[in-house]
Image (cartoon, rainbow, N blue to C red; front, side):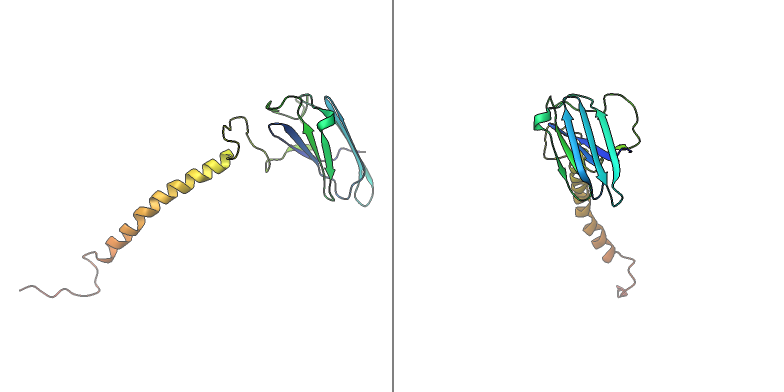
Length: 160
């Protein structure tokens, strides 16, 4: 038996944990108020996985659920207190080598007054706006080069 590798991320009302086990069978997820127990058989060799997590904060076991796919099992934990950020998944500050943060889905929702725009969207929007202003100036610079006096294309007739 060994723990399945897992990724997790934090949202305003839920904490998500994804156990990365392909072709899992006999999946068992047990939600308790401050603990999550996960077990399954994985892969073609029916390897036994068992994860026990003492949670950072309490959850609502009745509102928590999990969903199995061929590639992983995603657990959705309903926070006992909505709007309270979880800086980590576990009660203890220990580093678990099978657990990592899912940065693709991570979001600093605490500082977000505007839920729809994540900080990254805001940042790229800002970059786009800056780029837009510069583009306006560029054509003029190009235009100036075309009729610059030292263009050798045609000789000016001498003025007598």
